[in-house]
Length: 520
Image 1 (cartoon, rainbow, N blue to C red):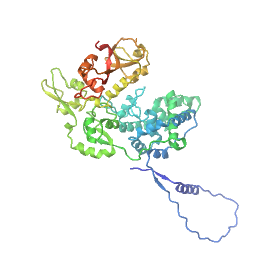
Image 2: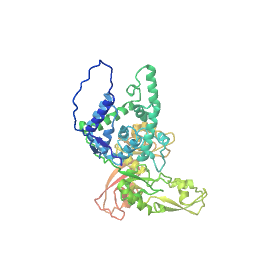
Image 3: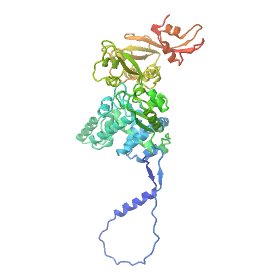
Image 4: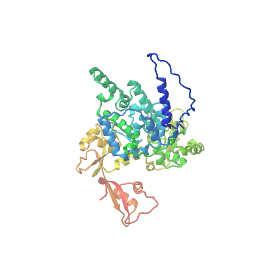
């Protein structure tokens, strides 16, 4: 493990002295008679020994390496004041960064890049790997889909490499190195280009040069967001470096590995992997936010991020688990008209995964034969950090007086639907865990929150309300479900009940009800 050291002033003074001696020069001058002096014997001077201090906090390690100049610019001052006035923000960020910051710092130092780049995920996402921006950027490093693919990140129904912290960190630093080279070895240009693209930065510098005005970052005409992006990073670096001066206390992060990337070799149910590791499914998923569903991706990457203290035992236990035991299987009888593509689509898997599991060489399948298909080991509701569950929570969070469900039709767009229901496009997208630039699919369900009960019902299938129902004598889950036209399984899930338990008169149940379908 690489442990930086802090050299105390004595050692530095010695080096400075050597620098002065090596730079001395002589010159011709008036000749003088030499003065003879008595030779005096002196005790040899013992060189001062530099004191070595082990750095145990990753924030201190970062402070020692921060070198970028902090200019006295208005926006830098504004952002510095904001961070100083909101110390809780950096405390939360530090807590989120704990598993990943050591890995990021190590990768930056390995490449000999400015340590200030380790602070970019704070500016980009506040170290939230599930962050999704209005510009359709995702993950700690806020990659858009085109840039993610360009720098080698995979994205599919099962997996989004933009949220895979180790993979996205490598891709982000690859991109920053590329931008540094493209912008003439100028880090402020490169950081600005990370936000807005190298073309805009290079063209802005060329315009200034043609006009005979300075071409440094502070004189460039760039998008408003980018003009604030670089000052925010520099202000943050100043606050981190001088945390004591500004009264900022960061949650310490141990200067040693917190996580280990384990090669697992095949697809595995996240719930099973969590059991093997001695963790909850959510704890494991927080370290592996790149996985969208209940399992890792069939075609890889076959990696799992684990707490470093659990990795060794996990690898031993995993070696004792056969690959066919890492998933639950459903035996599917092939029907006339079926194809591997249709079956894979129906079960949200891949053709290659089906062929591998069922030892199929070509694409031919026979009606009446059986296929083994992987299915989740637990109820899908228990995979709380899967894409579907995150979306459900976002859509069910109360944003107004009335919740409407809209079915997307041919020709619809976020702008058109938002205008129709008198809400902002950005709001509509956010309520549905999307960005305004994301494409809509015909038949897709969108949640719309409105305070206007007379909102247009065109295209609306549901009028959703949260109902607190008090159980009456003679009620049963089936009877209540029938009355409100909901499923018994939903009643059980919404109220964390067990099917074997009875409900009691006077008990209050929470229901999410389409009021157009409630029985009178």
